[in-house]
Image (cartoon, rainbow, N blue to C red):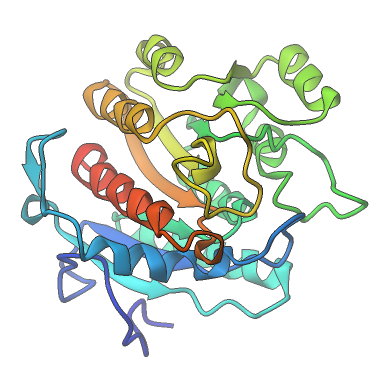
Amino acid sequence: MRFDEGYSGKVFIMSRPTFEDADVILYGMPMDWTVSFRPGSRFGPNRIREASLGLEEYSPYMDKHLEEVNYFDAGDIPLPFGNPQRSLDMIQDYVKKILDLGKFPLGMGGEHLVTVPIIKAVYEKYPNMALIHIDAHADLREEYEGEELSHSTPVRKACDLIGPNNVYSFGIRSGMREEFQFAKESGMHMSKFEVAEPLKEVLPTLAGRPVYVTIDIDVLDPAYAPGTGTAEAGGISSKELLQAIQYIAQSDVTVIGADLVEVAPVYDPTEKTPIAASKFIREMLLGWVK
C-alpha cells in the first residue's frame, strides 16, 4: 500500500505534495471499535484536517511558520471496520515503514488503543525509549469486561512492553483504584490532575532520550473539548496543554513520534474540539520536529 494511494480527501493545512520529500508523515487512524462509552472518534482525523484550514500558518508560541516544516498528510489508514486486531497490525506495519524511511510519524486518532501498535513499532527501533502520556484516564487496565483489546488498556500494554519506569503519565483524574495502585507500586511516573508544571519538572530527567508522546484530547476539561467519547470534568485548559507542548519543544528530549487521539466531533456542534486539536497538531509539528 502506498502512503498516498487513493486518498483524495482534505489534507492538513500546508501539507506538501509528495511523501518522498517529507520529513514528517501525518496520518489518520479512523478506529473506534473498542470504545467503552460513546463511539465516533473514527471521524476525528478528517475533522481535525478540516478545522486546520482556519489556522494561521504562523505560530506565535514557537515563532515559526509551517513552511519551515516539511510534512505530508498521507490521509487515513484504511482500517477494516470492526476488526481490532487486524487494524492494530496494519497500524504497526504502517508506522514501521515510516520509521524505516527515517521519517517522523505524527498520528491522529481514533480511539486510544491505536497507540499500542505505534509504540511497538517505535520500541523496535528505539529500545531505550520513554513514553510521555497526557490524558484524563490512567488507561492501565489489563482488560475491560473481559476484552484485552480495549481503549482503556494502552498504557498498561506500554508498561508491559517498555517497562513501567519508562512511562510518564500526566493529567490523570480517572481510573479504577487498582490502576492508581499499579502506578504507585510499579515504578511508573504518574502526575494527577495537572500537566504543564509536573511535566516541566520531569523533562530534564529525560534529556537525550528518545521520547514518544501520546495525547488524549480528553485531558482537557469538557468546557474546552466536549467532542470526545469519555469526557471527564475537572480537566486542564487548552492554554495549559499548549504550554506543555512548548515545554517539550524547549527541552533536550528527542521526540521520535507522537499522536493525538479520541476526538469525536459528533458530540461538539461548536467544533471547539477539532479546532483545538488542529492547533495542537500545528504546535507539535513546529516544536517537536528537529
